[in-house]
Length: 164
Picture (cartoon, helix red, strand yellow):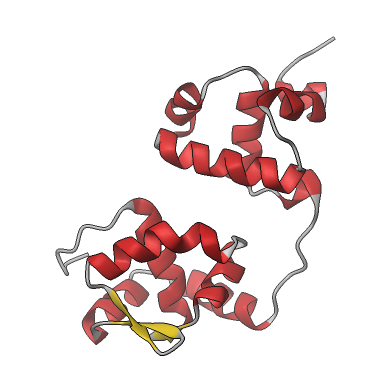
């Protein structure tokens, strides 16, 4: 981005989804598109506010500058932008259990079930260990498990990379 604002990867991701909604957006709409609880977005919203990318606008948020918003929107491939806007109008029902996990969450769950630490998983999937920890909390919530052991028991042997 040429605005010279250095966003974290997570913040940039959330801002791209928000920009697809419009110059002004409701946080719950962003959370819905990301299939995340609103509370999970608080750290990245704090970052975006602190960096001056967005501001509170009544009960919503707005991009502080049309140039920032435009640059973010123009960085989203048109088919993705279209899909985000369609998804906002027609949200898909959320599946439960394993099918409710994103592909990266499924991959992380499989690696954790194989006995990897968060640090090892982060190197395997090229994400920070903080991001892996965040995804792991989401996995635990979605699958209603409280520990790595419960997660490993829940996953079929074929998903854990085990054979007979």
